[in-house]
Image 1: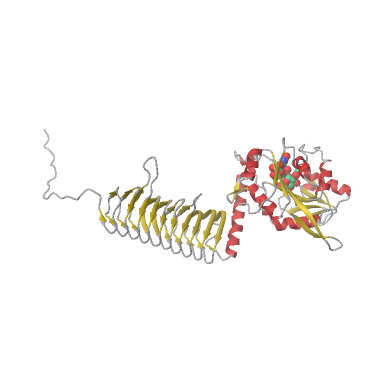
Image 2 (image 1 turned 135 degrees about the horizontal axis):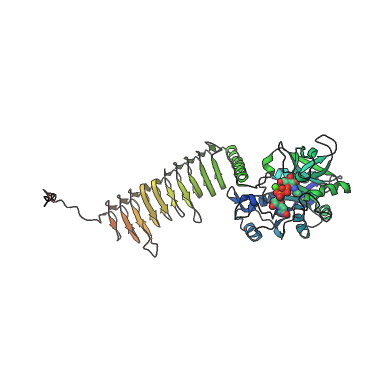
Length: 484
Ligand code: UD1
Ligand code: CA
């Protein structure tokens, strides 16, 4: 809620932080129906990342300025299920969009005079909170603090104009690219789009903006010249990590930021001891929690909430969503696990795949084996159960040590309703069986290969439900008739 600053007497001064997020722009170059700030990065809208930043700053509130796709953007803000701590979010509409200064003008009624305003953009997702704390400290509740960046190719950006020729001269103005003289265009220090400014001052300066410039827009960046005129110090906090201030304007930039974001996650996990075969071929679109000695081969994608237990090994090309995988389990290549709403759990020491598919509500006990081309949906398999090849288990309860043969399926759907199949402990289901649910196979029983089982089977019995094999001795095949 507050920033802590030592004032001259050494006492703590607590300043509330109000974050303003500009999110009204159209994002024409995305060529998408989805508003730009809702395009996903790491599986979540860009704007959610910016709201996370506001949370990390412990902001008193975030004021989101919406315009293009306003209804959709506003609705999306309240749907952030992964938000860990609450944040007071309010919205103001900017219609039409007359520039960044005009955007922030719309937020004025939502801003109390006692705070520091931190201005962010909804399409700049990877700013580190530590950087913003620096900026807020530089503002110190009384200065205008700008986040700036040295850029070899500054075309398009606002330039930081300083007194004298050095890089540390007093900041005099931000001049937009289109308004800059050739000398100013040669300046390589640019304004990132992010500032921290005392609210009361900001309001006074916003009231003085005009649009007499090359683009006919109300430039937020003009507040710098008003600060200079009012004798308010303007300070620049210069960083060299462009990713933190890079915005998304095109699909290419979105993909580049996605790689940067994924690399950050890969590095963080590797710092925690996770072994990634290649940090450049690894994607987490959600939260991945790993215990010790987890190894992950190339081209794996993790979505939603995924927990990997100690010593879990994930083969190449797996997609795993909303699942909890027990210690020591091996997931072989090309396995697809998606727990969606019901989740998937896999016990310790299981072997899954290659080419396995675990769907919502698959709950597997310890040491279960699920082999190639086996699909499991809404079923529990107890310890040591095995389905090793080409099989389907849907809406089934499978006991311990059950062996489920190749090509067997639960016929769980009668065209109108789904029914359960219960396979008790130690049952052996042969190959190519159809278990027509609802049905229970008694403990320790055996079902002969090729059976279509429609009635419950007794414990311990051999059940065969198929045409009896007959052989006709000395059978002579029909002969071809002579031509007429
Ligand atoms: C702005 C800065 C420029 C800086 C650059 C950094 C101004 C005048 N210029 O440039 O100095 O180098 O950011 O990226 O501020 N938006 C609205 N309403 C509007 C206009 C924009 O909400 O009327 C939003 C956009 O959706 C975007 C953000 O403000 O999220 C920045 O707008 P953008 O057009 O990208 O900024 P520039 O003018 O290019
Ligand atoms: Ca821009």
